[in-house]
Length: 244
Ligand code: BT5
Image (cartoon, rainbow, N blue to C red; front, top):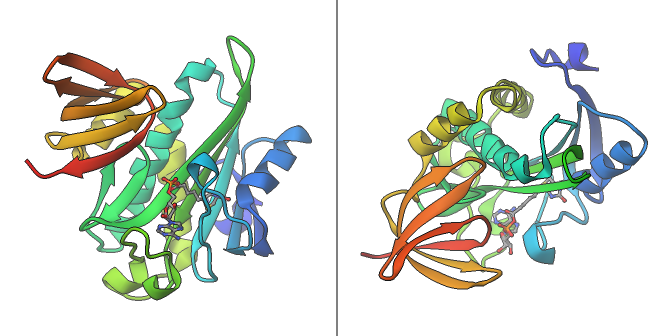
Protein backbone atom coordinates (compact mmCIF):
# COMPACT_ATOMS: atom_id res chain seq x y z
CA UNK A 1 0.00 0.00 0.00
CA UNK A 2 1.01 3.62 -0.61
CA UNK A 3 1.47 4.33 3.07
CA UNK A 4 4.12 1.60 3.52
CA UNK A 5 6.02 2.92 0.54
CA UNK A 6 5.89 6.39 2.09
CA UNK A 7 4.44 7.91 -1.07
CA UNK A 8 2.97 11.37 -1.03
CA UNK A 9 0.57 10.33 -3.80
CA UNK A 10 -2.52 8.13 -3.70
CA UNK A 11 -0.95 5.22 -5.56
CA UNK A 12 -0.74 1.60 -4.38
CA UNK A 13 2.56 -0.11 -5.08
CA UNK A 14 2.78 -3.76 -6.11
CA UNK A 15 6.37 -5.00 -6.03
CA UNK A 16 7.85 -8.05 -7.81
CA UNK A 17 11.43 -9.39 -7.68
CA UNK A 18 10.89 -10.82 -11.15
CA UNK A 19 8.10 -10.47 -13.68
CA UNK A 20 7.59 -10.82 -17.42
CA UNK A 21 6.59 -7.22 -18.00
CA UNK A 22 5.23 -4.67 -15.53
CA UNK A 23 3.12 -3.19 -18.36
CA UNK A 24 1.49 -6.60 -18.90
CA UNK A 25 0.80 -6.93 -15.17
CA UNK A 26 -0.68 -3.40 -15.03
CA UNK A 27 -2.92 -4.27 -17.99
CA UNK A 28 -4.12 -7.36 -16.10
CA UNK A 29 -4.94 -5.16 -13.11
CA UNK A 30 -6.78 -2.76 -15.42
CA UNK A 31 -8.85 -5.63 -16.81
CA UNK A 32 -9.69 -6.57 -13.21
CA UNK A 33 -11.02 -3.06 -12.60
CA UNK A 34 -8.11 -1.67 -10.59
CA UNK A 35 -6.65 1.84 -10.84
CA UNK A 36 -4.12 4.17 -9.22
CA UNK A 37 -1.63 1.35 -8.85
CA UNK A 38 2.06 1.08 -9.69
CA UNK A 39 3.69 -2.23 -10.53
CA UNK A 40 7.43 -2.18 -9.82
CA UNK A 41 9.94 -4.95 -10.51
CA UNK A 42 13.63 -5.57 -9.89
CA UNK A 43 13.98 -7.43 -13.20
CA UNK A 44 11.83 -8.26 -16.21
CA UNK A 45 12.14 -11.34 -18.37
CA UNK A 46 9.97 -9.95 -21.18
CA UNK A 47 10.32 -6.18 -21.00
CA UNK A 48 8.62 -4.43 -23.92
CA UNK A 49 9.53 -1.26 -25.82
CA UNK A 50 7.71 0.61 -28.59
CA UNK A 51 6.96 -1.01 -31.95
CA UNK A 52 7.38 -4.55 -30.57
CA UNK A 53 11.01 -3.94 -29.65
CA UNK A 54 12.59 -5.48 -26.56
CA UNK A 55 13.41 -3.57 -23.39
CA UNK A 56 16.39 -5.18 -21.67
CA UNK A 57 15.66 -5.21 -17.93
CA UNK A 58 18.36 -6.74 -15.71
CA UNK A 59 18.22 -6.75 -11.91
CA UNK A 60 18.94 -3.33 -10.39
CA UNK A 61 16.76 -1.21 -12.66
CA UNK A 62 13.57 0.66 -11.90
CA UNK A 63 10.99 -1.07 -14.09
CA UNK A 64 7.63 0.47 -13.26
CA UNK A 65 4.14 0.75 -14.76
CA UNK A 66 1.61 3.25 -13.51
CA UNK A 67 -2.08 2.41 -14.00
CA UNK A 68 -4.45 5.38 -13.91
CA UNK A 69 -7.88 6.26 -15.29
CA UNK A 70 -7.71 9.97 -16.08
CA UNK A 71 -11.01 11.51 -17.12
CA UNK A 72 -9.79 12.82 -20.48
CA UNK A 73 -10.29 11.88 -24.15
CA UNK A 74 -7.96 9.26 -25.72
CA UNK A 75 -6.27 11.99 -27.79
CA UNK A 76 -4.76 13.27 -24.54
CA UNK A 77 -2.85 10.01 -23.89
CA UNK A 78 0.52 11.26 -25.28
CA UNK A 79 0.52 13.92 -22.58
CA UNK A 80 1.17 11.19 -20.00
CA UNK A 81 4.27 10.04 -21.86
CA UNK A 82 5.58 13.59 -21.48
CA UNK A 83 4.56 13.64 -17.82
CA UNK A 84 6.55 10.43 -17.28
CA UNK A 85 9.57 11.76 -19.19
CA UNK A 86 9.64 14.96 -17.13
CA UNK A 87 9.15 13.06 -13.86
CA UNK A 88 11.91 10.59 -14.76
CA UNK A 89 14.35 13.29 -15.88
CA UNK A 90 13.69 15.27 -12.69
CA UNK A 91 14.22 12.19 -10.51
CA UNK A 92 17.49 11.47 -12.36
CA UNK A 93 18.63 15.09 -12.01
CA UNK A 94 17.81 14.92 -8.29
CA UNK A 95 20.46 12.14 -8.15
CA UNK A 96 22.96 14.43 -9.90
CA UNK A 97 22.69 13.07 -13.45
CA UNK A 98 22.52 15.66 -16.25
CA UNK A 99 19.37 14.15 -17.77
CA UNK A 100 17.52 15.70 -20.71
CA UNK A 101 14.58 14.55 -22.84
CA UNK A 102 14.69 13.61 -26.50
CA UNK A 103 11.22 13.78 -28.08
CA UNK A 104 9.04 11.95 -27.43
CA UNK A 105 10.05 9.41 -24.83
CA UNK A 106 13.80 9.14 -24.28
CA UNK A 107 15.54 10.37 -21.16
CA UNK A 108 19.23 10.64 -21.94
CA UNK A 109 22.52 11.76 -20.46
CA UNK A 110 25.03 13.10 -22.97
CA UNK A 111 23.35 11.30 -25.88
CA UNK A 112 23.15 7.95 -24.06
CA UNK A 113 19.75 6.47 -23.24
CA UNK A 114 19.04 6.36 -19.50
CA UNK A 115 15.31 5.65 -19.60
CA UNK A 116 12.41 4.95 -21.95
CA UNK A 117 8.65 5.12 -21.68
CA UNK A 118 5.90 2.95 -23.14
CA UNK A 119 2.35 4.27 -22.79
CA UNK A 120 -0.58 2.00 -23.55
CA UNK A 121 -4.29 2.62 -23.19
CA UNK A 122 -7.80 1.56 -23.93
CA UNK A 123 -10.61 4.03 -24.42
CA UNK A 124 -13.97 4.92 -25.82
CA UNK A 125 -14.44 7.75 -28.30
CA UNK A 126 -14.60 10.44 -25.65
CA UNK A 127 -12.85 8.98 -22.59
CA UNK A 128 -9.84 6.92 -21.67
CA UNK A 129 -10.87 3.72 -19.92
CA UNK A 130 -7.41 2.92 -18.56
CA UNK A 131 -3.88 4.16 -19.17
CA UNK A 132 -0.66 2.30 -18.38
CA UNK A 133 2.52 4.35 -18.39
CA UNK A 134 5.57 2.08 -18.32
CA UNK A 135 8.87 3.59 -17.27
CA UNK A 136 12.19 1.80 -17.63
CA UNK A 137 14.97 3.62 -15.78
CA UNK A 138 18.46 2.14 -15.78
CA UNK A 139 19.25 2.70 -12.12
CA UNK A 140 21.82 0.32 -10.63
CA UNK A 141 22.68 -1.58 -13.78
CA UNK A 142 25.93 -1.96 -15.68
CA UNK A 143 25.64 -0.45 -19.20
CA UNK A 144 27.63 -3.46 -20.41
CA UNK A 145 24.49 -5.53 -19.70
CA UNK A 146 22.35 -3.26 -21.90
CA UNK A 147 21.93 -3.52 -25.68
CA UNK A 148 24.67 -1.94 -27.77
CA UNK A 149 22.63 -1.00 -30.85
CA UNK A 150 22.37 2.51 -29.45
CA UNK A 151 24.42 4.01 -26.59
CA UNK A 152 22.93 3.37 -23.15
CA UNK A 153 23.81 4.51 -19.66
CA UNK A 154 22.62 4.09 -16.06
CA UNK A 155 22.41 6.20 -12.93
CA UNK A 156 25.03 3.94 -11.39
CA UNK A 157 27.48 4.66 -14.18
CA UNK A 158 26.72 8.41 -14.20
CA UNK A 159 26.58 9.18 -10.46
CA UNK A 160 27.18 5.93 -8.52
CA UNK A 161 24.78 3.50 -6.86
CA UNK A 162 21.43 5.09 -6.01
CA UNK A 163 18.74 4.33 -3.43
CA UNK A 164 16.13 2.87 -5.75
CA UNK A 165 13.28 3.26 -3.31
CA UNK A 166 14.03 6.98 -2.90
CA UNK A 167 14.37 7.50 -6.67
CA UNK A 168 11.12 5.63 -7.34
CA UNK A 169 9.36 7.64 -4.69
CA UNK A 170 10.60 10.93 -6.14
CA UNK A 171 9.62 9.85 -9.65
CA UNK A 172 6.11 8.76 -8.64
CA UNK A 173 5.44 11.94 -6.68
CA UNK A 174 6.58 14.09 -9.62
CA UNK A 175 4.42 11.98 -11.92
CA UNK A 176 1.37 12.37 -9.73
CA UNK A 177 1.78 16.14 -9.33
CA UNK A 178 2.24 16.70 -13.06
CA UNK A 179 -0.48 14.29 -14.15
CA UNK A 180 -2.99 16.31 -12.18
CA UNK A 181 -1.58 19.69 -13.31
CA UNK A 182 -2.64 21.81 -16.28
CA UNK A 183 -1.29 20.49 -19.61
CA UNK A 184 0.60 23.78 -20.17
CA UNK A 185 2.48 23.17 -16.92
CA UNK A 186 3.60 19.81 -18.31
CA UNK A 187 4.68 21.47 -21.58
CA UNK A 188 6.74 24.06 -19.68
CA UNK A 189 8.42 21.33 -17.63
CA UNK A 190 9.16 19.42 -20.83
CA UNK A 191 10.54 22.48 -22.66
CA UNK A 192 12.90 23.15 -19.73
CA UNK A 193 14.42 19.66 -19.99
CA UNK A 194 14.25 19.12 -23.75
CA UNK A 195 17.38 18.46 -25.80
CA UNK A 196 15.29 18.31 -29.00
CA UNK A 197 13.96 21.87 -29.28
CA UNK A 198 16.19 24.06 -31.42
CA UNK A 199 17.85 21.04 -33.05
CA UNK A 200 17.72 19.87 -36.62
CA UNK A 201 15.86 16.55 -36.48
CA UNK A 202 14.89 13.61 -38.62
CA UNK A 203 11.62 12.01 -37.56
CA UNK A 204 10.45 8.72 -39.00
CA UNK A 205 6.68 8.76 -38.66
CA UNK A 206 4.04 6.22 -39.70
CA UNK A 207 3.42 8.57 -42.68
CA UNK A 208 7.03 8.98 -43.75
CA UNK A 209 10.19 10.90 -42.93
CA UNK A 210 10.30 14.55 -41.85
CA UNK A 211 13.52 16.60 -41.67
CA UNK A 212 13.73 20.11 -40.26
CA UNK A 213 14.19 22.18 -37.13
CA UNK A 214 12.23 21.23 -34.01
CA UNK A 215 10.84 24.55 -32.85
CA UNK A 216 8.24 23.75 -30.18
CA UNK A 217 5.93 21.23 -28.59
CA UNK A 218 2.18 21.64 -28.10
CA UNK A 219 -0.48 19.80 -26.11
CA UNK A 220 -0.71 16.81 -25.95
CA UNK A 221 2.90 16.27 -27.07
CA UNK A 222 2.94 17.24 -30.74
CA UNK A 223 6.34 18.27 -32.09
CA UNK A 224 6.38 21.31 -34.38
CA UNK A 225 9.01 20.97 -37.12
CA UNK A 226 9.95 23.72 -39.60
CA UNK A 227 10.85 22.03 -42.87
CA UNK A 228 11.97 23.50 -46.20
CA UNK A 229 8.41 23.14 -47.43
CA UNK A 230 6.58 24.44 -44.37
CA UNK A 231 5.56 23.68 -40.80
CA UNK A 232 4.73 20.10 -39.89
CA UNK A 233 3.11 18.76 -36.74
CA UNK A 234 4.31 15.34 -35.67
CA UNK A 235 2.44 13.32 -33.09
CA UNK A 236 4.42 10.04 -33.15
CA UNK A 237 7.66 8.67 -34.51
CA UNK A 238 11.33 7.91 -33.98
CA UNK A 239 13.38 11.09 -33.72
CA UNK A 240 17.09 11.57 -34.36
CA UNK A 241 19.02 14.75 -33.69
CA UNK A 242 21.09 15.76 -36.73
CA UNK A 243 24.22 17.85 -36.87
CA UNK A 244 23.45 21.37 -38.14
C1 BT5 B 1 11.23 2.61 -25.04
O1 BT5 B 1 11.04 2.15 -26.31
O2 BT5 B 1 12.14 3.34 -24.72
C2 BT5 B 1 10.18 2.13 -24.04
C3 BT5 B 1 10.76 1.34 -22.90
C4 BT5 B 1 9.73 1.05 -21.83
C5 BT5 B 1 10.24 0.06 -20.82
C6 BT5 B 1 9.37 -0.03 -19.59
S1 BT5 B 1 10.12 -0.95 -18.30
C7 BT5 B 1 8.64 -0.98 -17.42
C8 BT5 B 1 7.53 -1.21 -18.45
N1 BT5 B 1 7.33 -2.63 -18.67
C9 BT5 B 1 7.64 -2.98 -19.93
O3 BT5 B 1 7.56 -4.14 -20.40
N2 BT5 B 1 8.06 -1.90 -20.62
C10 BT5 B 1 8.00 -0.70 -19.81
P1 BT5 B 1 11.88 2.59 -27.58
O4 BT5 B 1 11.93 4.07 -27.68
O5 BT5 B 1 11.24 1.83 -28.68
O6 BT5 B 1 13.35 2.09 -27.32
C11 BT5 B 1 13.69 0.73 -27.46
C12 BT5 B 1 15.15 0.59 -27.83
O7 BT5 B 1 15.98 0.98 -26.75
C13 BT5 B 1 15.55 -0.85 -28.13
O8 BT5 B 1 15.32 -1.14 -29.47
C14 BT5 B 1 17.05 -0.85 -27.79
O9 BT5 B 1 17.79 -0.28 -28.85
C15 BT5 B 1 17.12 0.15 -26.65
N3 BT5 B 1 17.08 -0.47 -25.30
C16 BT5 B 1 16.51 -1.63 -24.89
N4 BT5 B 1 16.67 -1.82 -23.57
C17 BT5 B 1 17.36 -0.72 -23.12
C18 BT5 B 1 17.82 -0.30 -21.84
N5 BT5 B 1 17.59 -1.00 -20.72
N6 BT5 B 1 18.48 0.88 -21.78
C19 BT5 B 1 18.72 1.64 -22.87
N7 BT5 B 1 18.31 1.29 -24.10
C20 BT5 B 1 17.63 0.13 -24.23
